[in-house]
Amino acid sequence: MKAFRLDELELERAVNDGAYLQFLREKNMSVGLYALDAGSTDPQQPHRQDEVYFVVSGRAAITVGTETTEVGRGSVVYVPAGAAHKFHHISEDLRVLVIFSPPEG
Figure 1 (tube, rainbow, N blue to C red):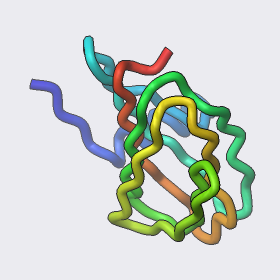
Figure 2: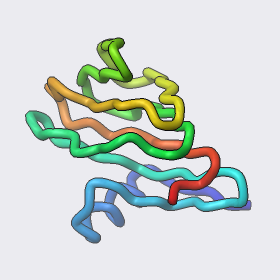
Figure 3: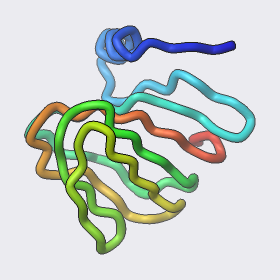
């Protein structure tokens, strides 16, 4: 079994000074923790994999293609492979679990 604690993942991500920490990689999927601070800009480009975002904490808007929605704790967003997408108007520090299928690059 592989089990993780969000507080430990957040610490590891911060120590490695990055916005994204991949913490699980398997044959058909990978999972990471993505962090964007309030007021920051999301530098993402479209990915070759399908993604699911699960918002752990924070508040922002996300645009996928031409559709925009507000997200907060508990929100789940699906982003198909190749779709342009960005978090924006980040009003509270955002922490998001990201599931890629197949595994990210």
